[in-house]
Length: 386
Image (cartoon, rainbow, N blue to C red; front, top):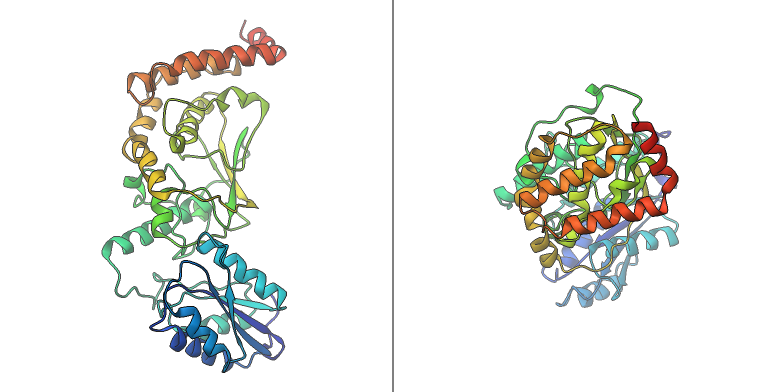
């Protein structure tokens, strides 16, 4: 926390992406500005970010309003591909304008301007950031389906458990790609109740802010950008599963054989199924899987989200089954057995018809390449097993 703030010295920037809001754009913008002006800031500037997603008269209406309200700036950003781009444009505008505080708000009265003063009251106390929540005391969801409520609520539970936060509503309602959907309501331990240990973790997944690698269901139903807690790390030990992807993941040399990516499956599942195999084999060596704080920001390239969804369906349906099957396998400890353990795991996935039998030919080629390119490593491993 910081020292209590004096609003007379604070310049406020309001970032609000808008699209197809012609029926309420002027009323909403005016009400937000009026609420913020009453707080006594040094200055208030409302940045309305519009792009080609808006096809009605919203831009025209706001341009006209800006001629009468000088604290409104209409930012046209035709290069935007998604709402993340719109937010990033808004952030750049606030930084360029020299704003001290930034208020993010959704258009169309989905966020009520009358609630804004509650945020500023907490900021004045010295907090660096204040979040709104639908699930804390006094929060509510109106005109929303039960399905949307369930996704939002369950996403917060999983997020807090995996990321070490204690927020009531993560806004992004985020869960990792590959997480079994039938487990998102499972009870999770509080972060403060977890034991602290020194662990050997030769595979470490770093989180990524702004637009992390999540599944298509999240992208189709939830907003972005995302910002993760910076002060929590979670290590998963034996019999605790969690998918990890190929984004911002560090592998130490002992675990190199486990880098193998299956080819006879969809692109959206290859790194997820690799992660399950790698975790199962890691347990035999006393290794943990570490998730650590975000140290990157991802600006994601454009995806066909419905195609992503189709490619993820095998995982939605079978990820739990795959973990259970791998968990039953008899493997051997020691880095000298990593390749043999890989073969056992993929033979099981072939037996389950998760991947094609041709996968085993590629796996053999991978092992041969490793032996050819890292002979000292394999020689050391063979010697240690004799």
